[in-house]
Length: 376
Length: 144
Ligand code: SF4
Ligand code: SF4
Ligand code: FES
Image (cartoon, rainbow over all chains, first blue to last red; front, side):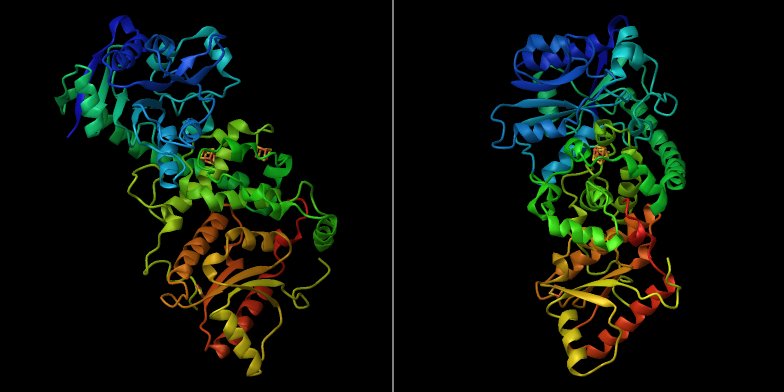
């Protein structure tokens, strides 16, 4: 059963309609603050901002095709020391929402008093491609062109193969999939908190509206198609990067700056093992390592770093592509981490960010599983 | 490689749980069981303490195989360390498979403290199988 209201869009002004909805949440005092993407005055970026005054919501541009950072990281910083003490809505893309749920399981964010608002996501361009887009077009044009994950090759790789461009957990969803957003947008309540807020904002919720069903049908259809597309994509990726020689080639340009790890929303350790004293070797240890093969690549342990990261966070990889965006040398990290990530997730029938109740595979076990491992 | 397959002596790193597989190795020694010396043991307090980073590090720095030895499922001294270790090994093997790396070079075995002969048998098995596989290509690449 779905509970939703239909937001009518006047004169095809999608951004305006969404902003007035968001502003209404402030005006009706359903929330006190909001983390929401605002257009940067320079016109060349859209950045998350923590807003406490409703007028700033006029600058919001939630569908603009750019995602400078995965906002789960921002919420991690905000709630690092304490929970938020006022009702704060966070407007997130689906991959940000999923990362947030993973961080909550890892006890790295505190969700208390947060209101999760998720959008159906039409995708994003790289930060340095966005100014080109913004010079010619507006987010409304982008949304009106429809969901083009498979066709628009300028989209980030992660967006092109995104498995869940719709929120899996949200109090409120701003839905567009399967609809004509230049006319109508669906605001759906998915939790008691979501319902309470929408009612308080004066919206009367409809049960299983035609629009909600239409969106659901589109999601079901998409889910079937994307499986095939991802399968093909991963098969191609395996041909491109499979085996030690090709992997070695892919990471030949890695300078081990660890930007990828820093940008990854689910690389959760406060102090990474790779910057810990374990890797502060004295000269003799370096030389002894070099002796093993006669030469030691420096900085050392490049592939070790990536393979370890996959082992540590592969189950939680949400495919946001923040790693690839952060890489100064254009190493195609998204496809490598998503390939390995999605195959381990399949091994544990785990979908990162699907539900707070699902335990992280590394913290759980079953007595009867993987029984071929460790036996003759 | 100058070595031919027959001359090739595999280098294997074994992470052995102190309470079971490690104790089994002692027993194999005191009962003078014969087994090849290719496995270099590293004693750990429980298979559950072995982060895959160490297994990967061994493989990338010259080991031809790695193994994790723990207590039989249900018998872990710390209750469930080996169940978690088993998941980690499953995950590591899957990641290797996904990336086209040789996951057959990652081994696990549950051998209890009283299974000295089992331990010796397994040392033979892992050494011979690794010998058959030949030197690991991961072990030879300095540029990774
Ligand atoms: S961001 Fe790129 S260059 Fe830096 S460590 Fe990651 S893969 Fe290597
Ligand atoms: S590994 Fe890359 S794609 Fe996966 S969650 Fe981290 S930043 Fe996103
Ligand atoms: S104590 Fe032996 S595996 Fe845990």
